[in-house]
Length: 440
Image (cartoon, rainbow, N blue to C red; front, side):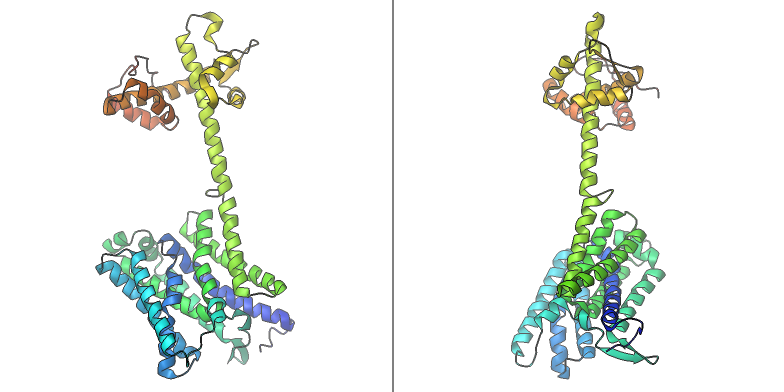
């Protein structure tokens, strides 16, 4: 049992070492998990955690012992075999990475089950330890160093973390290029496939090193969830790695605290907390969260409704020239043309930004600024009708609805390109004049 830091009570001392070792293991998984998420190889950790089973059994058969060193070596050997055979099948077997991984890990897992059945009387596998690990007991398995007792698991996990950080430091440019485009990295001499193979080997070592401590549940969770959560919060790889590390550390500390209070599995609760963190990320992410997406869709709908009103006012004025006040429509006229898509709030929005005016008789008219905006919308609509008519020979009664949808997404560059392709038409297929290009 560890007796330091001395200023902490025994209970807090146990919590300190458990959280420290768990954080190191989980941060290592989170760093590598970022690259797995980007490569769409997130389930590699789950596959490796199953594929190492024959290595564990063979290590016992050869040594007749369940001590850590032979078990670690046996598991590492089969983890690396899984990674190597997966790459071999992908390169020479005409199979995708996902298919290759599925073939190899299921075969090894089945082999492990057969070996367990054959040696059932000699080999004992603790189901709870495999699934949940034994992170609560890391402070009980100690080794001496510098006159102090240290958790044995600390040095294993710390070695793997330092190795991963060193790999990133030395080969950052190569790793970054290989993760996003392995073929391109290989073509320009940045060792694309070597970097990818090294990543798989490091994942294998990380899985084996963390397997006994935190169990397969937390290993798989930390290889996937922190990276997936960080990806929702940033588009930069460096920031993604840092956020995933913070996410893993917080999940470890918070999960252990809750598990202590509820007297339940610490590793399982850490995995649960990480899952809840992902829920928060996907809900509140400023760029990809559900709330942000809903708000963007709402703003898009508001813009489309407002642009529809501008188009209605422009076409009304165009078709009612010389009719005095009748040139300007009233509310019921706009509502009748827009139909069920009409939103009264659009009028207030347009009036607030100075695009339309309303007189005492509730007649609506375009301001100079509003007319320029309406011309851009109608111009895009009629150019798109002309494009559909010229390129696809659609019937005239099929042109309006398609152009009505597209007019809201055509930018200035697209309108100019269509105009050049069509030879600067002056009228649409219905004979209506196409507004001139905005000089601004």
